Length: 123
Image (cartoon, rainbow, N blue to C red; front, top):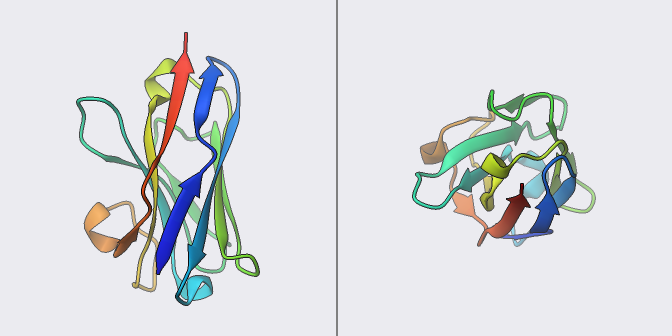
């Protein structure tokens, strides 16, 4: 499975930005998907994940209520809509796919990773 994330950019605090991740080369519709991020000087952390069907999702406490995740299995894409952005949301955002049956908030349970897209939130 190859993943490509895009949609990053510069946005002011309080603004919104949508990220997308396009998958190819595999069975996208059966795979749980996740978004992670890595801020400068910090370890990569979990942001959100969605089940293979799109019916269930989980979020990090830091983004709950501000971010939503969705997927379109017909188009092999997963999206992360980010609202009420804060400067601390600044990071490189990565999408990931898992060969496991259920979604996860743990990096080691994801098998394929996109190249990352930079989100910068100015204060």
